[in-house]
Amino acid sequence: MASFRYLVSDVDLSIAFYTKHLGFALQQQFGPAMAILTRGDLTLWLAGPMASAARPMPDGRTPEPGGWNRIVLEVRDLPALAAAMREGGVSFRNEIVDGPGGRQILCEDPSGNVVELFEPRA
Image (cartoon, rainbow, N blue to C red; front, side, top):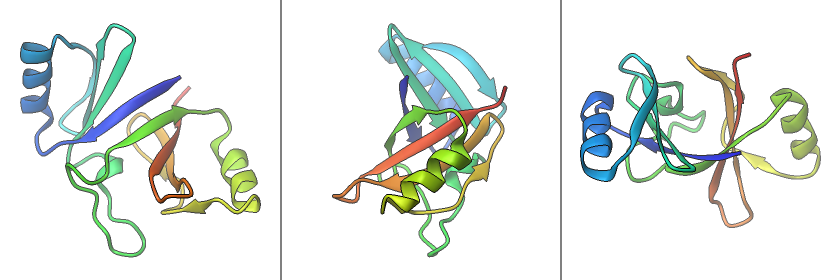
């Protein structure tokens, strides 16, 4: 399953915008850190400044709205997958981080586009 994550400055304001103006429904919210919205088959994750997705990268870059949007692929056994991908030469921006809904890591495609691999909590 693929989902989209947008980094936002304020989760509550963003929920209001997407539900009021674009027909999304709130599926789940993790306080001010994150919310999951749906619209038909589309799942949109809104990650605020307190979300694990907003943490600085090891090289000092800081994710912010507009520059770190990415496709999210839900996976099983994230550590094993990340290890296999590293062995295959895939570049990663960070190490696996834990957040309120699960674990994630950011890899880059050959052009430098970000793909988030996410393992939800059981």
